[in-house]
Amino acid sequence: MTEIEVNLNCPIFGEPGRTATFAYPIGLGAAGTTPLSIGSAAIGIDFTGTYTGNVIDFSDVTIAPTGSNGPCLIRAGTYASPIDLGVDEDQSGLIRLYTTTQAGGTSYDRGVFACAKTTNTKGVFPIAGLAEVNAIASGAGPNKVQAAQFISHLNSATAKLATLGGDTTAGMYGAWLKVTSEVGSVAASGSRVAAVWVDNQMNGTVSGEEFGIFASCGGTKVDSFIGFNTTGAGWTNFVSFDDTSYDQDPIGTATIDSGTQDKYLKVSLNGTAYGIAMYAI
Image (cartoon, rainbow, N blue to C red; front, top):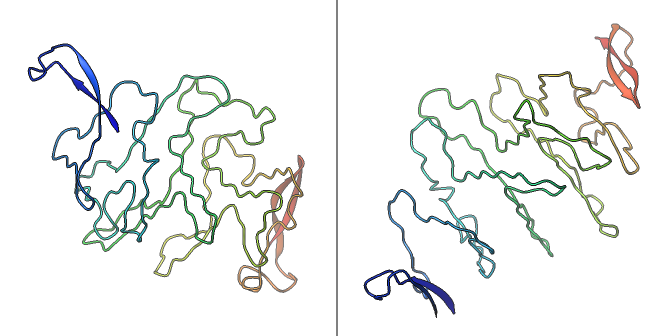
């Protein structure tokens, strides 16, 4: 049963200025139909007021997956028939979410949170994105193709970032990428675990630059390209090349017996500066 609030400020009910709540079952269409269709309008559905529960709740819904074009809780187009954003050059998008808070304390708000669990062999990807450039009818194509963009911004001259204060999870990062496991769990022999997978698969002509990692900086001088901190046993090696890569460029296999050592990579070990020699070869 679902309660319906009816506004009695209507000649049909004859009692202006009153509302009443009735408990009636709502049945919107049969299976395979579209029970509610909203046509062209400035706003399709407008939610107002204060809610003590979820504004939209799918908790009791069960879907039967059939593939990427199968049923979803929320769908906007398909891979073959995406939503057409037209030819207007101005920014657009499918979903934009903005929040603000003035609360104090040590908690936090999440704009979007997704959790995908598994108890069997099926893989889980809580969030996935594909930025795809298809056939270009004319022109040079876009110069911005980014599957994900994450920005943390101190957006004011009076904005502040508090000290870590002993909290190893604190800090300002564009992204926090973490893999973790509980004591007793097993990553099988031959498996692979990494917090970041950098995968270059450019099979076409790359006349410009290509990197596994591209780093840039501006503003104040950065302390280091990579910062290391550990609460465990640390790292066995700084870099590891497996049997598919140890004999490939840029690995040199002979002793340097020529050239001039006139450069070095600066490394800080617990605050003391060291140099890794570099030879012009």
